[in-house]
Image 1 (cartoon, rainbow, N blue to C red):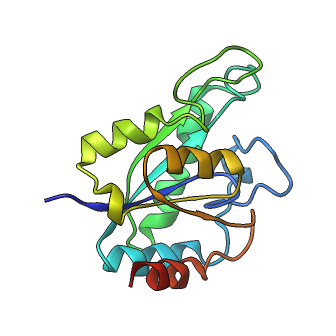
Image 2: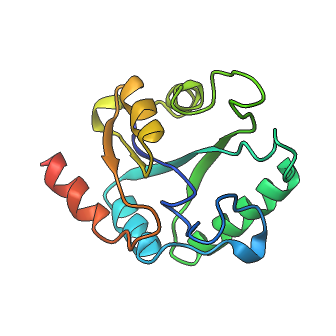
Image 3: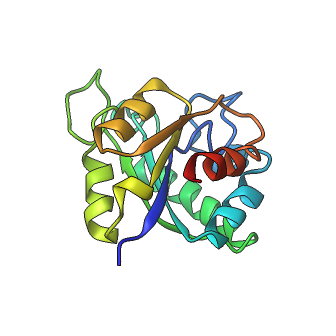
Length: 166
């Protein structure tokens, strides 16, 4: 049976990036208001969650993949307190200033990998992002999309998805 999924951008959607464009230190990683509760409600509606994030600071040598993994471990831990599970986090370590790749949004290789791996129903799935590149990547993979304002309370997401799913 195909699964319904919500693909989420990380910085700006799941966590607050207001003071740091590149969030790579565990101590700078904080969930946006309402995201834990919202994902819990959506999980109870049968959605699985996959994070798709560009981490170009790796290519620029501003931080390492180990830094990214440490932040992701904190994300897993914070969401576990809401009984929310992220199935997988796919991140692109490349940057357009350093080269070209197929996994950096707005391209959609990482989304396609997840769709195949988790047997996801595109027609029942969403991509939530705060940048136009997120929305382009979601549409390229045939997902419904929601563009949010970065760093805000994400409680309203569950209502948007509920209204657009009915």
